[in-house]
Length: 218
Image 1: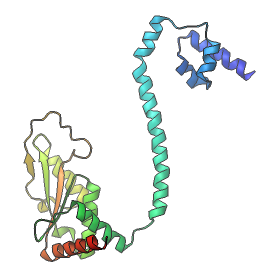
Image 2: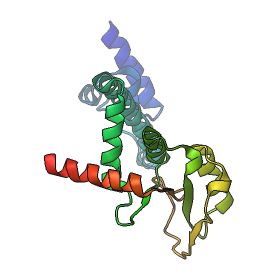
Image 3: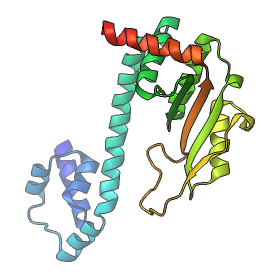
Image 4: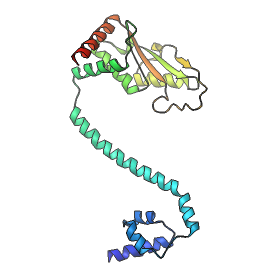
């Protein structure tokens, strides 16, 4: 009985000019079954062209569906990772900061402890890491790198708010001229690149020796 009702619904929807995919979404039957039910009800060439013109909508719907599935999957992975990592100890933070500095920190300039990145979370972690050495945010200087067609004030205000460091501790921003219209500042570059800087010979030497030790034992 239910099958008969589904077939009747499919016929009515086909009479309205719906495609197999559209009908399939409504009554949850396979396209092979629809092909059997509706083999004597082909769509007109005009209607086929209309459906093809409507394809961007269906593509967007499909993308949204896939995104929702991905978001759900990633949320489950996040829950698992949260349990696996749990809370970070002081030693965990110390080692994580060293590896971050090994990859992103300034190493060539003696007495200058600094990191440069476009990711606010990474820069904030670096500032948090420096607290392990008794360094406070008021001891730091900040320099922002921007392109000439960016909003300088918006960039400075953004980083000042994110890092909770007043603009009085910011150097004059470095503005790079560009005529490249292809640059859209996506993927994290929308607010420029931020450098957090500390002048400290003792801390720089400590970090360098710590990285030397890690490189030997690894």
